Image (cartoon, rainbow, N blue to C red; front, side):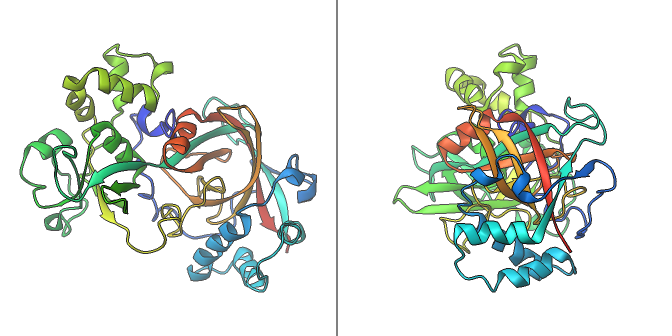
Length: 370
């Protein structure tokens, strides 16, 4: 999501279920998207603009993550059958990877069926935003430097996870969460941003890294803290970026709680101990995301795990991005055929890129030839 629209999360107050990976149960597993309208056949993959320039770095390992999901899913699809063929290729070269996709896939140019995100109907251009995995400094115990707790989902609530719970301000003033602390961090705004992303890493004082994933919420509606700042005339819409919100908080420490309490929703975490910390966070397919190869999409139109060719631009340099990516995540703010949230990776640099990403882009869905 990005911070202008990973910040679709922050700016769009109407979005429910903002957090990443919260929507892993949305939409039934299916392969065939609505391709009779809103998409057009194109020539073969090699004819796509920018296809020949894609380095293919990370493509095969990311495709195999889609295959891991598809092989476990209770569906029979052409994608799943291609995964069986993929297993026969061991450590393929760049040329072999390109040939695999060229030999086995055809493309559908995705187009807007209805006006969306300011783009007209029957347009091949859509909105590309970005998201990332935050890394915060923290401690497993409360210290003078680390005073802001991150909580696990209370065990006493697990009997009814859909019940509306107290809003953030009331919840944090009460003793309901006492004993549910996972870790403490030093920046309340960064903690709130991590809640919006739905996952992140905590770098502990001894250098160890703790990965946290989404565990649930208090079921309160999401409200935008950026909108609160705009309504307070503290900044304009064009200024409402992650970086500017953080800078405002540093200038106004006495008003931070008012800012954060404007959003009644509160997110809980769990420790993700499986897998390598070098891997990305777990996406909605239950597989680790790959930086600059995984995207979040609307699964009404793009089947889970599918390869997609994305053409957009780097928000910082303006350089073209023409990349084979994979539909391995989703989110409630990601709506429409030509709509993607681009996973930039972990840490501050990825966060900076995610915070700037609000680009036009085109998307081609890759579907098996037979």
